[in-house]
Length: 91
Image 1 (cartoon, rainbow, N blue to C red):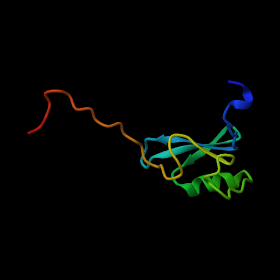
Image 2 (image 1 turned 45 degrees about the horizontal axis):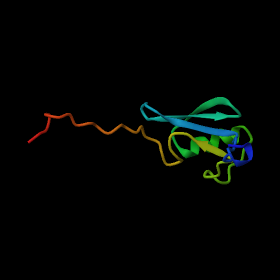
Image 3 (image 1 turned 30 degrees about the vertical axis):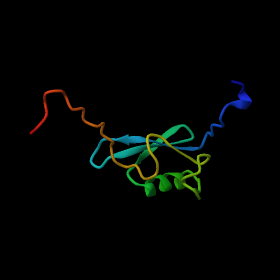
Image 4 (image 1 turned 90 degrees about the vertical axis):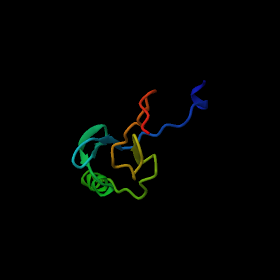
């Protein structure tokens, strides 16, 4: 694959990492490659951005924010589905 044929990958200033277990669960926020804090809501992400002089007009714009392990609506830990073992059926 040539470089011109590769998909465009943006490098936004804000990166919101996957949900971490906690009470309540949280997501780590990075700005310009540096960890700046934890977010428990979208509002926390906006406050972190504002503290670094970044105005966010569209949380869905991948050139502004990259959401890892979910989107702006993902704030709980996803659990893997339980696998039912043979012979362990309930009646």
